[in-house]
Length: 162
Ligand code: GDP
Ligand code: MG
Image (cartoon, rainbow, N blue to C red; front, side, top):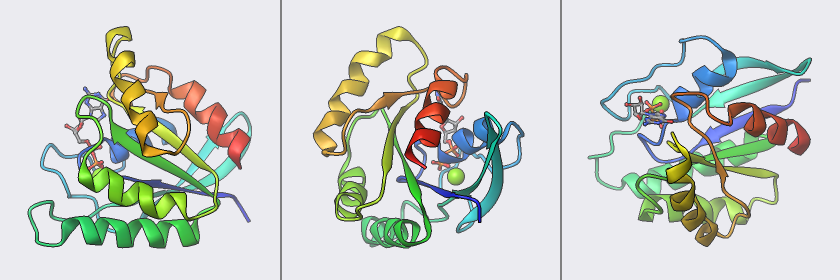
């Protein structure tokens, strides 16, 4: 069976954009209105000749009550189904309570985690990405899902973690 990579994170950090970047098609649902991705949409990824399954999580209404709890629950489900977790945080916003809730689940998971500091569209933003060290999940990896900046490096790291 192919290794499963679950993409987790709170709404609007760019999970679906990153999935699109990785699969090379505009197929995962991206909206400026956050929370439109249905629960757990699965795609096939291919990088350096290796195939893997990519699971885009999401589908919460960020305005709904108990959102942080439901994000943590979704992270737990993702942890159980995945071989590798791709945790996406918005470096332009920094660490939020919802990010902390996900990180708490992931720290206990005992599975390989790649921490993507997304929306690092230029060199200047790389400094902001360093604040994500506070999540206690190792080195934040700057990437721009939108422009593709450093997305190859991120994929290399994912393959290494499989
Ligand atoms: P999701 O809810 O985590 O799946 O987030 P989406 O992929 O739907 O993206 C939410 C918003 O962030 C959209 O407006 C995207 O265009 C934007 N976005 C995603 N990645 C980047 C990025 O690398 N840089 C910038 N500037 N915006 C991004
Ligand atoms: Mg989405």
